[in-house]
Amino acid sequence: MTEGTEQPQRPLLRVVRGEPTAEELAALTVVVAALSQPRTRRRPVPVGAWGSPVHGHRRALLTGPGGWQSSGRPA
Image (tube, rainbow, N blue to C red; front, top):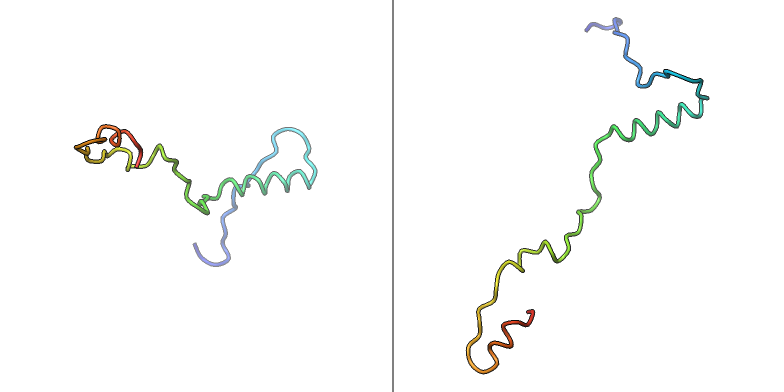
C-alpha cells in the first residue's frame, strides 16, 4: 500500500433497525470495543484445598501405641 491510497475500512458497528442516539451508539461502541480486547487476570484464581496436591499423598503409618489413632488425624 502506498502513501495517499487508503482502502475504506469496514465499520465496527452497523445499525440495522431503529435510530439510536449519538450517546447510545457511543455507549455500545465502548462496550463492544472493551469486550473485543483480550483480558488478563490481575491476580490468579485462588485454588481451594480441594485442588491441593498435598492431599493426594499419605503420611507414613506410625507403628506402636496410638499409631492407628494418629494415622487418621490431619497433619
